[in-house]
Length: 220
Image (cartoon, rainbow, N blue to C red; front, side, top):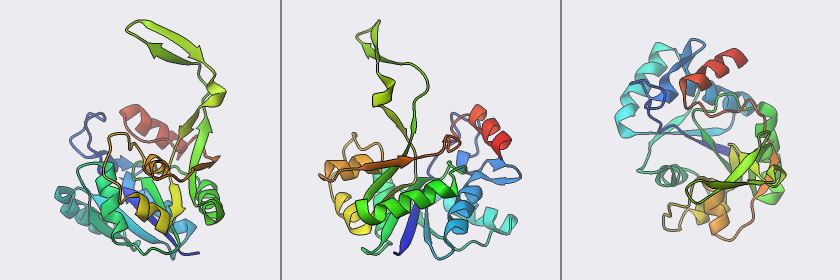
């Protein structure tokens, strides 16, 4: 089945304490975003890759591709005001056939096995997300200073890529934007379609802080 992926790379460097957007920070000698693209290209060299970037970062990304001799085929598209609007822009460049994954540009450590599991499961379940278990105790906040323990085995941590049947995802993104849309699964769920889970890999962290970057360097 035809596979595509939309890589959302609209982050900034604010929580990294850097003026450089986090997707462009160096990780083992090259920008984070390049590591992420490489994982998907290695998984399927025929996969169409769409990279969503803020319009003011397009030129810089092209310069980085020249500087690092980065030649993996991909198409760039302009991101929107929110993740929802960015993904919708990317979907406009893809067909209604096959499977479409959506992945965070700053998750360069996703396992090829997890990518494969997501796309394979989406062939028959149409809406798949990778998840991991919560290992810490979880408490529910009630009021200003009250909280209670909740059973952590009833909750999961959600990762990307989130993979969907192309027609289903495109139809879901015809909805009006809602602040409740925190990821693609929430958009699809709001359209009335169930979302199913596969096991993710714990190393697939989202690089948000300097600590995350150090962890990623160690893992690589």
